[in-house]
Image (cartoon, rainbow, N blue to C red; front, top):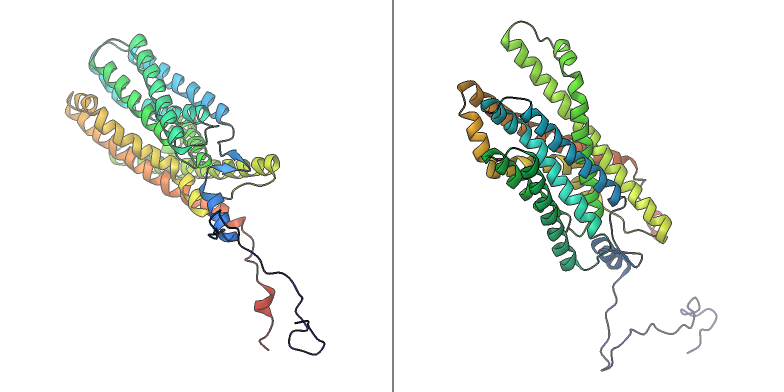
Length: 349
């Protein structure tokens, strides 16, 4: 019926009804709504028709490989500069966490670089694990060739290889951008810790380190907390900046980029602390023999190893929470006000 002026259908236009697409047997095909389509775009690994990949993966891989080489070299020089025996064992146990963290990050970054263009989740994961295994084997061979051939060397080599494999498996996750942000945040925190070592003595004096042992311990505790606080702050900022830069680059290249919601920023900010805690788990499983050997040297060494283990756990927790909180705060400040529909503002008739 035609719409007549003044009738109840005068404001309506004659338009054909939308016909749902059908398959060959006449069955209607369900098409996702706008929100569902956006959700699938956010969960998938394809952005703008290309597999999602971590931008700057080659730079991250080069930095992490250089960092791992520097940690292995410094550990070797410290061990070889002392007489063989109890001192070398203590130094090996002290340097083990730095080597394991570097191997963990290197396995992840090199695997990201190797799997950047792979879109299938299963293939990507298998390739990432294989790349981590290759990095672990190269690291273990390098340690065995350059370190003294003993049980301590074998422990460091085996634990570092296991860490590299775990890092490679981590790189097989679907959200490669988040993994890239975690590796950058961890590298930032680790490099900061090395640079911060030059400020430990002045800060100890500032926090009241005196002649008594208790004052030295109290000052050392505050110095450690300051280091963890600043490391977590830098890690959170690095994770946020990487994710923001990655999104903007994808928008310029493809015209659109799958947005990351706040849980992704939360995980990226907490990632550095999570990797430090994961390092501690790997050490206490794979490096248990070396730690027990170092603790058995004397009563003082046993107390020192226990204190170092507790300090590493506390440092990981601080970096985790401070990094996550920093990233969420910075991300929240970039969010604009929620748009209000015009229909909601109009009074009911």
